[in-house]
Image: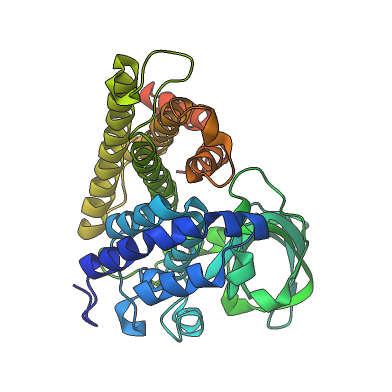
Length: 393
């Protein structure tokens, strides 16, 4: 239980109670290309945006597994609401790796909404007291309701070399294009963000190479709360699975709701539930969902055991997390495909939520972060004793 008396069960109960409203608002959200304010207010009231905030700032400090349970529950009602919440919550967890000064700024009121651009398509130029940021970032999910933006960029060194960096900038410093018109995750408001000559104080910029050098020199760096040091990439890869698991659970429920009284057109079957193919399809989808859940649970267990012990996951464990997260995503996607294809032609109507769940899971599975082929390659290389050929582990 969190120190302020809010436990995981109470947040889960609060989210479950709003799932019908999130589903009801789905078409409106898609039409406006951003979440209704009602969704955000309900999620905020439930405590969702305080899940990764440390206790000392009035947060809930939930474990990775518990955060993911809540995010999956949100996805049962609205995939876009879950994805935006995942971006905001995972970015808030990343802030716990930054300086105390920055954490005090971000977590001043406990709840934190931080979107991000996770491709290094900007440049930080050193100046007195900090840096000047210029750049453009696409797919900035959740930016329309965020307070901060966490952006990847390059720092220009005096010798012309470039170093990777992470900058945290108030959302008001960006301009946003009205360019998010997508067939999947339409309600995430993932517009293109642009920063032009934005000053970023030095304490809001982290340069991983410099942090590694400082650690090697014995300089003490900020540590995450006890039991929350999951490792950056393991955390991000595994937590993304939660939205997919929730989408699949929601699609399963929506499919069952449509079944009573449905026949099979142009056949003598008046009850689809009585047809062996439907029974096989439902059993297969349920098994794929269960398998995805089991893979996710194993990943969370490994990461939590390492975090509790204050240890880094091994290379093999980190590679397995990349591979298993992508495969869990694939299983969830396949489950939704089966249910959608068994739903008859009327499922294509936009007011039917199941078609939106299907489009959302298809589009989201194309995300480069969780693409099956890329992650299987990395995992397979490590299984064969080869270099993983990527630093993203």
